[in-house]
Amino acid sequence: MSSPARRKVAVATLGCKVNQFESAAFLAGFREQGCEIVSAAGQAEVFVINTCAVTARASQQSRQLIRRIARDNPAARIVVTGCHAETATAELQDLVPGQRLIVLGNAAKDLAVSTALAAESGHVVLPEIGAAKEICQLPLVRRFSGRTRAFLRVQDGCNNFCSYCIVPYARGRSRSLPLAAVLAQTRLFVAEGCRELVVTGINVGKYGLDLTEGLDIYALLETLCREFPAIRLRLSSIEPTEVNDRLLRVLSEHNNFMPHFHIPLQSGDSGVLARMNRRYTAETFAAAVHRLHSVAPQAALGCDILAGFPGEDEQAADNSYNLLAGLPISYLHVFPYSIRPGTAAAQFTDQVPVAVKEERVDHLRTLDRQKRLAFYQQHLGTEQQVLVEHKDKKTGLLKGFTENYIPVQLRSAASLAGTVVAVRLVEMRDGAVLGTIES
Ligand code: SF4
View 1 (cartoon, rainbow, N blue to C red):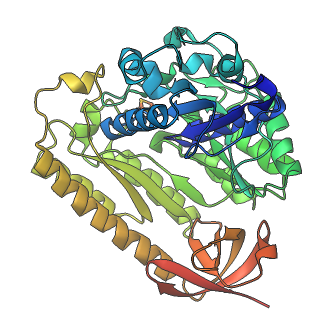
View 2 (view 1 turned 120 degrees about the vertical axis):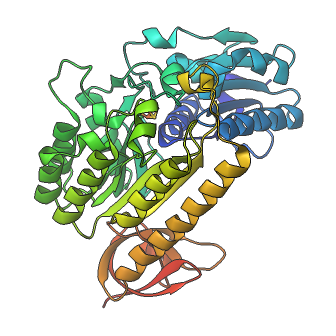
Protein backbone atom coordinates (compact mmCIF):
# COMPACT_ATOMS: atom_id res chain seq x y z
CA MET A 1 0.00 0.00 0.00
CA SER A 2 1.28 3.52 -0.81
CA SER A 3 2.20 6.01 1.91
CA PRO A 4 -0.84 7.48 3.69
CA ALA A 5 -0.32 10.84 2.01
CA ARG A 6 -0.81 9.41 -1.48
CA ARG A 7 -3.36 6.73 -0.84
CA LYS A 8 -6.35 6.37 -3.11
CA VAL A 9 -9.40 6.59 -0.89
CA ALA A 10 -13.10 6.18 -1.65
CA VAL A 11 -16.12 6.77 0.57
CA ALA A 12 -19.44 5.05 -0.17
CA THR A 13 -22.61 6.20 1.54
CA LEU A 14 -26.08 4.80 2.08
CA GLY A 15 -28.92 6.27 4.05
CA CYS A 16 -29.89 9.54 5.64
CA LYS A 17 -28.72 13.14 5.47
CA VAL A 18 -26.69 12.68 8.66
CA ASN A 19 -24.73 9.85 7.02
CA GLN A 20 -24.19 12.02 3.96
CA PHE A 21 -22.82 14.85 6.09
CA GLU A 22 -20.56 12.47 8.00
CA SER A 23 -19.20 11.00 4.78
CA ALA A 24 -18.45 14.51 3.50
CA ALA A 25 -16.54 15.05 6.77
CA PHE A 26 -14.56 11.83 6.23
CA LEU A 27 -13.63 13.04 2.75
CA ALA A 28 -12.54 16.39 4.20
CA GLY A 29 -10.33 14.53 6.69
CA PHE A 30 -8.76 12.38 3.95
CA ARG A 31 -8.11 15.49 1.83
CA GLU A 32 -6.38 17.13 4.81
CA GLN A 33 -4.11 14.08 4.96
CA GLY A 34 -3.25 14.54 1.27
CA CYS A 35 -5.05 11.41 0.07
CA GLU A 36 -6.34 11.12 -3.47
CA ILE A 37 -10.14 10.85 -3.46
CA VAL A 38 -11.58 8.51 -6.07
CA SER A 39 -15.02 7.18 -6.92
CA ALA A 40 -16.34 4.30 -4.83
CA ALA A 41 -17.53 2.71 -8.08
CA GLY A 42 -13.90 2.09 -9.14
CA GLN A 43 -10.64 0.91 -7.58
CA ALA A 44 -9.10 2.29 -4.37
CA GLU A 45 -6.65 1.27 -1.67
CA VAL A 46 -8.92 2.29 1.18
CA PHE A 47 -12.71 2.31 1.33
CA VAL A 48 -14.95 3.72 4.01
CA ILE A 49 -18.50 2.41 3.70
CA ASN A 50 -21.05 4.36 5.72
CA THR A 51 -23.99 1.98 6.02
CA CYS A 52 -27.69 2.23 6.91
CA ALA A 53 -30.05 -0.11 8.78
CA VAL A 54 -33.30 1.85 8.90
CA THR A 55 -35.17 -0.86 6.97
CA ALA A 56 -34.42 -4.50 6.15
CA ARG A 57 -33.79 -3.36 2.58
CA ALA A 58 -31.26 -0.73 3.68
CA SER A 59 -29.37 -3.38 5.65
CA GLN A 60 -29.42 -5.70 2.65
CA GLN A 61 -28.17 -2.92 0.35
CA SER A 62 -25.39 -2.20 2.84
CA ARG A 63 -24.27 -5.84 2.75
CA GLN A 64 -24.43 -5.92 -1.07
CA LEU A 65 -22.28 -2.82 -1.30
CA ILE A 66 -19.68 -4.20 1.11
CA ARG A 67 -19.58 -7.50 -0.78
CA ARG A 68 -19.23 -5.77 -4.17
CA ILE A 69 -16.44 -3.47 -2.99
CA ALA A 70 -14.57 -6.33 -1.27
CA ARG A 71 -14.83 -8.49 -4.40
CA ASP A 72 -13.72 -5.77 -6.83
CA ASN A 73 -10.87 -4.60 -4.59
CA PRO A 74 -9.30 -7.77 -3.18
CA ALA A 75 -6.34 -5.95 -1.59
CA ALA A 76 -8.12 -2.84 -0.30
CA ARG A 77 -8.60 -2.01 3.34
CA ILE A 78 -12.30 -1.73 4.09
CA VAL A 79 -13.66 0.33 6.95
CA VAL A 80 -17.36 -0.29 7.54
CA THR A 81 -19.19 2.16 9.74
CA GLY A 82 -22.75 3.47 10.18
CA CYS A 83 -25.93 1.90 11.49
CA HIS A 84 -25.56 -1.53 9.86
CA ALA A 85 -22.01 -1.80 11.20
CA GLU A 86 -23.31 -0.88 14.65
CA THR A 87 -26.17 -3.38 14.69
CA ALA A 88 -24.83 -6.34 12.64
CA THR A 89 -21.13 -6.41 13.50
CA ALA A 90 -20.77 -10.20 13.57
CA GLU A 91 -22.34 -10.64 10.11
CA LEU A 92 -19.82 -8.24 8.59
CA GLN A 93 -16.89 -10.41 9.61
CA ASP A 94 -18.25 -13.11 7.29
CA LEU A 95 -18.70 -10.70 4.38
CA VAL A 96 -15.05 -9.67 4.26
CA PRO A 97 -12.82 -12.53 5.37
CA GLY A 98 -9.20 -11.92 6.26
CA GLN A 99 -7.53 -9.08 8.07
CA ARG A 100 -8.52 -6.15 5.89
CA LEU A 101 -11.88 -5.28 7.47
CA ILE A 102 -12.26 -2.68 10.20
CA VAL A 103 -15.68 -2.25 11.80
CA LEU A 104 -16.17 1.19 13.31
CA GLY A 105 -19.21 1.90 15.46
CA ASN A 106 -21.20 5.10 15.17
CA ALA A 107 -19.65 6.46 18.37
CA ALA A 108 -16.19 6.06 16.85
CA LYS A 109 -16.82 7.89 13.58
CA ASP A 110 -14.37 10.58 14.65
CA LEU A 111 -11.69 7.89 14.22
CA ALA A 112 -12.68 6.97 10.65
CA VAL A 113 -9.83 8.78 8.90
CA SER A 114 -7.04 7.90 11.34
CA THR A 115 -8.15 4.25 11.55
CA ALA A 116 -8.42 3.91 7.79
CA LEU A 117 -4.87 5.23 7.32
CA ALA A 118 -3.26 3.52 10.34
CA ALA A 119 -0.60 0.83 9.93
CA GLU A 120 -2.52 -1.96 11.64
CA SER A 121 -5.73 -3.45 10.28
CA GLY A 122 -8.36 -6.05 11.03
CA HIS A 123 -10.26 -5.02 14.12
CA VAL A 124 -13.52 -3.79 15.60
CA VAL A 125 -13.88 -0.40 17.31
CA LEU A 126 -17.30 -0.43 18.89
CA PRO A 127 -17.70 1.86 21.89
CA GLU A 128 -21.01 1.33 23.77
CA ILE A 129 -23.33 3.53 21.69
CA GLY A 130 -25.95 3.89 24.44
CA ALA A 131 -23.33 5.44 26.69
CA ALA A 132 -22.19 8.10 24.19
CA LYS A 133 -22.70 11.51 25.78
CA GLU A 134 -21.32 13.76 23.08
CA ILE A 135 -21.77 14.03 19.35
CA CYS A 136 -18.70 12.92 17.36
CA GLN A 137 -16.48 15.85 16.46
CA LEU A 138 -15.70 15.45 12.77
CA PRO A 139 -13.43 17.40 10.42
CA LEU A 140 -15.01 20.60 9.08
CA VAL A 141 -16.63 20.02 5.70
CA ARG A 142 -15.53 22.38 2.98
CA ARG A 143 -17.20 20.82 -0.01
CA PHE A 144 -20.56 19.16 -0.21
CA SER A 145 -21.53 17.39 -3.41
CA GLY A 146 -23.09 19.97 -5.69
CA ARG A 147 -21.70 22.79 -3.50
CA THR A 148 -24.82 24.93 -3.68
CA ARG A 149 -26.85 23.12 -1.03
CA ALA A 150 -25.41 21.27 1.96
CA PHE A 151 -26.64 19.32 4.92
CA LEU A 152 -25.65 20.83 8.24
CA ARG A 153 -25.59 18.11 10.88
CA VAL A 154 -26.38 19.63 14.27
CA GLN A 155 -27.70 16.63 16.21
CA ASP A 156 -27.33 12.86 16.41
CA GLY A 157 -29.21 10.05 18.19
CA CYS A 158 -32.74 9.66 19.50
CA ASN A 159 -34.35 9.03 22.90
CA ASN A 160 -37.79 8.06 21.64
CA PHE A 161 -37.62 4.30 21.09
CA CYS A 162 -40.53 4.10 18.68
CA SER A 163 -41.37 0.41 18.72
CA TYR A 164 -40.47 -0.24 15.05
CA CYS A 165 -37.25 1.75 14.95
CA ILE A 166 -33.69 0.53 15.25
CA VAL A 167 -32.17 4.01 15.23
CA PRO A 168 -31.85 4.52 19.03
CA TYR A 169 -29.93 1.22 19.20
CA ALA A 170 -27.74 2.21 16.28
CA ARG A 171 -27.14 5.87 17.11
CA GLY A 172 -27.57 6.16 20.86
CA ARG A 173 -29.14 9.00 22.83
CA SER A 174 -29.75 12.49 21.52
CA ARG A 175 -26.56 14.56 21.35
CA SER A 176 -26.14 18.04 19.92
CA LEU A 177 -23.35 20.01 18.35
CA PRO A 178 -22.44 23.07 20.45
CA LEU A 179 -23.42 26.37 18.86
CA ALA A 180 -19.82 27.49 18.24
CA ALA A 181 -19.21 24.35 16.16
CA VAL A 182 -22.50 24.82 14.26
CA LEU A 183 -21.53 28.39 13.45
CA ALA A 184 -17.98 27.43 12.40
CA GLN A 185 -19.32 24.81 9.97
CA THR A 186 -21.96 27.20 8.65
CA ARG A 187 -19.40 29.96 8.04
CA LEU A 188 -17.19 27.56 6.13
CA PHE A 189 -20.07 26.36 3.95
CA VAL A 190 -21.00 29.98 3.23
CA ALA A 191 -17.39 30.94 2.44
CA GLU A 192 -17.27 28.02 -0.02
CA GLY A 193 -20.27 29.33 -1.93
CA CYS A 194 -23.09 27.35 -0.39
CA ARG A 195 -26.46 29.11 -0.73
CA GLU A 196 -28.75 26.76 1.15
CA LEU A 197 -28.33 24.68 4.28
CA VAL A 198 -30.58 21.87 5.42
CA VAL A 199 -30.45 21.79 9.23
CA THR A 200 -30.21 18.08 9.86
CA GLY A 201 -30.21 15.55 12.67
CA ILE A 202 -31.63 12.17 13.58
CA ASN A 203 -34.25 13.79 15.82
CA VAL A 204 -33.33 17.38 15.08
CA GLY A 205 -36.26 18.85 17.04
CA LYS A 206 -34.44 17.77 20.21
CA TYR A 207 -31.45 19.92 19.31
CA GLY A 208 -29.75 21.51 22.31
CA LEU A 209 -31.70 19.79 25.07
CA ASP A 210 -28.60 17.84 26.12
CA LEU A 211 -26.34 20.91 26.13
CA THR A 212 -25.90 23.49 28.89
CA GLU A 213 -26.09 26.39 26.42
CA GLY A 214 -29.83 26.93 26.93
CA LEU A 215 -30.52 26.67 23.20
CA ASP A 216 -33.18 24.57 21.53
CA ILE A 217 -34.06 23.99 17.88
CA TYR A 218 -36.16 27.16 17.62
CA ALA A 219 -33.40 29.33 19.09
CA LEU A 220 -30.87 27.66 16.81
CA LEU A 221 -32.99 28.32 13.71
CA GLU A 222 -33.55 31.90 14.81
CA THR A 223 -29.79 32.39 15.33
CA LEU A 224 -28.87 30.88 11.96
CA CYS A 225 -31.52 32.89 10.12
CA ARG A 226 -30.34 36.11 11.75
CA GLU A 227 -26.59 35.49 11.39
CA PHE A 228 -26.78 34.30 7.77
CA PRO A 229 -29.50 36.39 6.11
CA ALA A 230 -28.29 35.61 2.58
CA ILE A 231 -28.48 31.85 3.12
CA ARG A 232 -31.63 29.81 2.68
CA LEU A 233 -32.23 27.58 5.70
CA ARG A 234 -34.38 24.51 5.55
CA LEU A 235 -35.28 22.18 8.40
CA SER A 236 -34.89 18.48 7.58
CA SER A 237 -37.83 17.33 9.72
CA ILE A 238 -39.93 18.19 12.74
CA GLU A 239 -42.20 16.03 14.88
CA PRO A 240 -45.93 16.94 14.98
CA THR A 241 -45.64 17.85 18.67
CA GLU A 242 -42.83 20.29 17.86
CA VAL A 243 -44.90 22.45 15.53
CA ASN A 244 -45.62 25.38 17.84
CA ASP A 245 -45.78 29.18 18.08
CA ARG A 246 -42.02 29.47 18.21
CA LEU A 247 -41.58 27.58 14.94
CA LEU A 248 -44.26 29.73 13.32
CA ARG A 249 -42.55 32.86 14.63
CA VAL A 250 -39.23 31.91 13.00
CA LEU A 251 -41.15 31.28 9.78
CA SER A 252 -42.96 34.62 9.84
CA GLU A 253 -39.97 36.70 10.95
CA HIS A 254 -37.29 35.31 8.64
CA ASN A 255 -37.60 35.28 4.88
CA ASN A 256 -34.60 32.99 4.65
CA PHE A 257 -36.33 30.20 6.59
CA MET A 258 -37.82 28.05 3.86
CA PRO A 259 -41.54 27.18 3.96
CA HIS A 260 -41.00 23.45 3.81
CA PHE A 261 -41.74 21.06 6.67
CA HIS A 262 -41.29 17.34 6.73
CA ILE A 263 -43.42 15.96 9.57
CA PRO A 264 -43.14 12.21 10.15
CA LEU A 265 -46.61 10.75 10.63
CA GLN A 266 -45.97 6.96 10.31
CA SER A 267 -49.65 6.06 10.77
CA GLY A 268 -52.88 7.99 10.55
CA ASP A 269 -54.56 5.64 13.01
CA SER A 270 -54.24 6.62 16.67
CA GLY A 271 -54.35 3.01 17.87
CA VAL A 272 -51.44 2.07 15.61
CA LEU A 273 -49.58 5.21 16.65
CA ALA A 274 -49.91 4.17 20.30
CA ARG A 275 -48.48 0.73 19.53
CA MET A 276 -45.70 2.40 17.58
CA ASN A 277 -44.93 4.37 20.75
CA ARG A 278 -45.31 7.62 18.78
CA ARG A 279 -46.49 10.05 21.43
CA TYR A 280 -49.22 11.85 19.51
CA THR A 281 -52.53 11.07 17.87
CA ALA A 282 -53.76 11.43 14.30
CA GLU A 283 -55.59 14.57 15.48
CA THR A 284 -52.35 16.13 16.76
CA PHE A 285 -50.76 15.57 13.37
CA ALA A 286 -53.75 17.02 11.53
CA ALA A 287 -53.73 20.08 13.81
CA ALA A 288 -50.01 20.64 13.13
CA VAL A 289 -50.57 20.45 9.37
CA HIS A 290 -53.57 22.80 9.48
CA ARG A 291 -51.65 25.25 11.62
CA LEU A 292 -48.70 25.42 9.25
CA HIS A 293 -50.98 25.57 6.24
CA SER A 294 -53.04 28.44 7.64
CA VAL A 295 -49.92 30.51 8.38
CA ALA A 296 -48.05 29.57 5.19
CA PRO A 297 -50.47 28.19 2.57
CA GLN A 298 -47.62 28.00 0.06
CA ALA A 299 -45.50 25.77 2.33
CA ALA A 300 -44.52 22.29 1.21
CA LEU A 301 -45.75 19.87 3.86
CA GLY A 302 -44.44 16.34 3.58
CA CYS A 303 -44.54 13.28 5.77
CA ASP A 304 -43.27 9.74 6.23
CA ILE A 305 -45.81 6.94 6.41
CA LEU A 306 -45.22 3.29 7.29
CA ALA A 307 -47.55 0.77 5.68
CA GLY A 308 -48.31 -2.60 7.24
CA PHE A 309 -47.20 -2.09 10.84
CA PRO A 310 -48.09 -5.20 12.91
CA GLY A 311 -51.80 -5.20 13.72
CA GLU A 312 -52.64 -2.56 11.08
CA ASP A 313 -56.04 -3.85 9.92
CA GLU A 314 -58.09 -2.62 6.94
CA GLN A 315 -59.75 0.04 9.05
CA ALA A 316 -56.44 1.39 10.37
CA ALA A 317 -54.97 1.42 6.83
CA ASP A 318 -58.05 3.31 5.60
CA ASN A 319 -57.70 5.76 8.48
CA SER A 320 -54.14 6.54 7.38
CA TYR A 321 -55.10 6.93 3.74
CA ASN A 322 -58.16 9.06 4.44
CA LEU A 323 -56.35 11.32 6.88
CA LEU A 324 -53.63 12.05 4.34
CA ALA A 325 -56.04 12.36 1.42
CA GLY A 326 -57.98 15.04 3.33
CA LEU A 327 -55.00 17.13 4.47
CA PRO A 328 -53.04 19.78 2.53
CA ILE A 329 -50.01 17.51 2.32
CA SER A 330 -47.68 18.04 -0.66
CA TYR A 331 -45.86 14.72 -0.73
CA LEU A 332 -45.46 11.42 1.10
CA HIS A 333 -42.48 9.18 1.68
CA VAL A 334 -44.01 5.72 1.90
CA PHE A 335 -42.19 2.75 3.42
CA PRO A 336 -43.35 -0.81 3.98
CA TYR A 337 -42.87 -1.83 7.62
CA SER A 338 -39.98 -4.26 7.98
CA ILE A 339 -38.95 -6.16 11.07
CA ARG A 340 -35.86 -4.70 12.72
CA PRO A 341 -34.38 -7.31 15.03
CA GLY A 342 -34.04 -6.09 18.60
CA THR A 343 -36.94 -3.64 18.44
CA ALA A 344 -40.17 -4.05 20.40
CA ALA A 345 -42.34 -4.45 17.28
CA ALA A 346 -40.18 -7.36 16.05
CA GLN A 347 -41.84 -9.38 18.84
CA PHE A 348 -45.39 -8.44 17.82
CA THR A 349 -47.20 -11.53 16.62
CA ASP A 350 -49.76 -9.87 14.33
CA GLN A 351 -47.41 -9.17 11.39
CA VAL A 352 -49.16 -8.10 8.18
CA PRO A 353 -48.70 -10.40 5.14
CA VAL A 354 -46.25 -9.10 2.53
CA ALA A 355 -48.87 -8.96 -0.25
CA VAL A 356 -51.20 -6.84 1.89
CA LYS A 357 -48.33 -4.55 2.82
CA GLU A 358 -47.37 -4.11 -0.84
CA GLU A 359 -50.93 -3.26 -1.79
CA ARG A 360 -51.08 -0.58 0.91
CA VAL A 361 -47.71 0.80 -0.17
CA ASP A 362 -48.93 1.03 -3.79
CA HIS A 363 -52.12 2.75 -2.73
CA LEU A 364 -50.23 5.33 -0.69
CA ARG A 365 -47.63 5.88 -3.41
CA THR A 366 -50.43 6.62 -5.86
CA LEU A 367 -51.72 9.18 -3.38
CA ASP A 368 -48.20 10.62 -3.16
CA ARG A 369 -48.08 11.11 -6.95
CA GLN A 370 -51.49 12.78 -6.92
CA LYS A 371 -50.49 15.08 -4.06
CA ARG A 372 -47.22 16.12 -5.69
CA LEU A 373 -48.90 16.77 -9.01
CA ALA A 374 -51.66 18.83 -7.40
CA PHE A 375 -49.11 20.85 -5.40
CA TYR A 376 -46.98 21.56 -8.46
CA GLN A 377 -50.00 22.42 -10.59
CA GLN A 378 -51.23 24.91 -7.99
CA HIS A 379 -48.02 26.83 -8.56
CA LEU A 380 -48.11 26.96 -12.38
CA GLY A 381 -48.20 30.56 -13.58
CA THR A 382 -46.59 31.87 -10.37
CA GLU A 383 -43.15 33.40 -9.98
CA GLN A 384 -40.83 31.57 -7.60
CA GLN A 385 -37.33 32.14 -6.26
CA VAL A 386 -35.31 29.18 -7.51
CA LEU A 387 -31.88 28.28 -6.25
CA VAL A 388 -30.20 26.90 -9.36
CA GLU A 389 -28.06 23.90 -8.44
CA HIS A 390 -26.59 22.32 -11.55
CA LYS A 391 -27.04 21.42 -15.20
CA ASP A 392 -28.56 18.05 -15.95
CA LYS A 393 -26.17 16.27 -18.33
CA LYS A 394 -28.94 14.34 -20.07
CA THR A 395 -31.39 17.14 -20.78
CA GLY A 396 -29.01 20.11 -20.78
CA LEU A 397 -31.50 21.88 -18.51
CA LEU A 398 -30.60 23.63 -15.28
CA LYS A 399 -32.15 22.17 -12.16
CA GLY A 400 -33.06 23.83 -8.93
CA PHE A 401 -35.62 24.11 -6.16
CA THR A 402 -38.13 26.76 -5.20
CA GLU A 403 -38.31 27.92 -1.61
CA ASN A 404 -41.10 25.41 -1.05
CA TYR A 405 -39.08 22.62 -2.58
CA ILE A 406 -40.65 22.26 -6.00
CA PRO A 407 -38.02 20.81 -8.35
CA VAL A 408 -37.76 23.08 -11.40
CA GLN A 409 -35.99 22.66 -14.72
CA LEU A 410 -35.11 25.61 -16.93
CA ARG A 411 -33.13 26.44 -20.02
CA SER A 412 -30.39 28.97 -19.29
CA ALA A 413 -26.65 29.48 -18.99
CA ALA A 414 -24.77 27.12 -16.65
CA SER A 415 -23.24 30.23 -15.02
CA LEU A 416 -26.50 30.67 -13.10
CA ALA A 417 -25.67 27.64 -10.95
CA GLY A 418 -25.36 28.72 -7.33
CA THR A 419 -27.60 31.77 -7.73
CA VAL A 420 -31.21 32.46 -6.79
CA VAL A 421 -33.29 33.61 -9.75
CA ALA A 422 -36.90 34.61 -10.27
CA VAL A 423 -38.55 31.91 -12.35
CA ARG A 424 -42.07 31.64 -13.72
CA LEU A 425 -43.36 28.09 -13.52
CA VAL A 426 -44.93 27.45 -16.89
CA GLU A 427 -45.78 23.83 -17.43
CA MET A 428 -45.51 20.27 -16.27
CA ARG A 429 -43.70 17.77 -18.44
CA ASP A 430 -43.17 14.12 -17.47
CA GLY A 431 -43.73 14.93 -13.82
CA ALA A 432 -41.21 17.81 -13.82
CA VAL A 433 -41.99 21.52 -13.59
CA LEU A 434 -40.53 23.66 -16.35
CA GLY A 435 -39.78 27.31 -15.70
CA THR A 436 -38.60 30.39 -17.54
CA ILE A 437 -36.46 33.13 -16.13
CA GLU A 438 -38.29 36.41 -15.63
CA SER A 439 -36.44 39.25 -17.32
S1 SF4 B 1 -38.27 9.47 16.63
FE1 SF4 B 1 -38.81 7.30 16.52
S2 SF4 B 1 -38.69 6.89 14.31
FE2 SF4 B 1 -37.52 8.75 14.63
S3 SF4 B 1 -35.39 8.06 14.94
FE3 SF4 B 1 -36.37 8.25 16.98
S4 SF4 B 1 -37.10 6.18 17.45
FE4 SF4 B 1 -36.71 6.26 15.23
